[in-house]
Image (cartoon, rainbow, N blue to C red; front, side, top):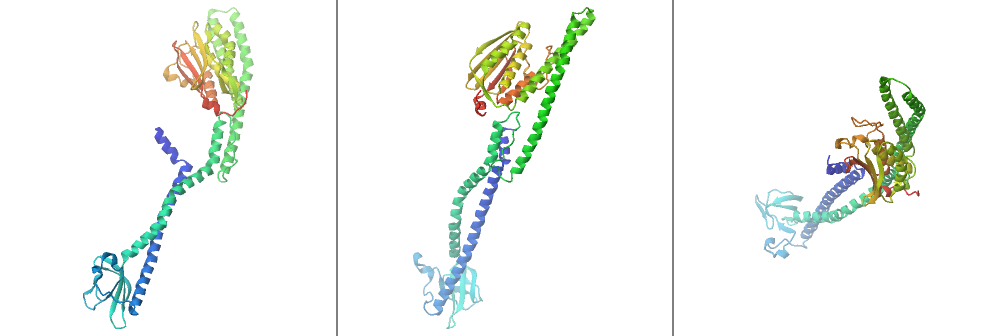
Length: 454
């Protein structure tokens, strides 16, 4: 799915978008309905006004105060042509009225609408006291123009105000939904492994029961995760002593007199015990990291943490014949838990040392650039194939053919910590042909965390 398609899908599923869209449709439909209603109402009023005008004109003619048109209306100047035609209707099958045209014979007295010569006329037919029959008429086009003008006079201001109403509706909807957006941003800032409650302050009454249910679910989930972490930590701690005792016994057996076959069979046992101890150490490290997931972030000097980790692992590097050193160390600050940052650095360096053959080297670099703070670990080991560089972050995943003892949890712990700190960890190829592991924490990730002095 492309980015544009995803954006359109998200917009269609947005509550604010749907409310704004439906309100716009309703306002538009209301405006159209109001315009139609205004037109028909104005047409009705104009019809009554026209009928009243025709009746008043006929009354003046019948009272002798207004004479029948003495001349053909069409012969008058354009600006003085009468809008109301008052003429005498001659009896006969083919009645021709000046200014109107041919009328059908046998028209009854009274008000009605007729068509003559392609025009629609509103006519009042009546008889004068002397027996003559007269017609007072006016074209309906004039009435329709009045109705249209009246409808436009009512509709145009509404149409002009419609965009303003849409903007106001959108602002009102956005302000109404703002507590939900603020709660979402707060959860993002406090994210990570900590399961914090969704704040209910300011939430609409319709949303508050849903938020309460979510908080109850988060509470139960938090308890389940805490029990799981305690179980992992307790199990790893309880297994440490028996494994240590078995390791000591295996070492004592190795010093004892035995046949070459027995010594050959003892070697896999020693390797299995070593792998089990490494797994327990990683499980304990994972439990400690998860236990401090909710710790308030601090400003941690990364360069000092790197010095401590190098001092701790230099003995392991010397024992394996690996040159462990620092290529570039500049003052740099990270935001997060010191325990998390130390575990991240230690796992990256320990992983590089263990998989670098004797005679190789591991170089660390710490510096800050426009992209944020960068921790880089280069080794001269066998490297990781490009198609496996994401898989190695999965828990307990190990490359096929790897002879080094390990648990497959180190890089998984690193990725977990990086996600919680708002940074990113990537694997690439080092200049020496080995692995280049980089952790980067952008400035935005540090600024999004609440301030807490370290």
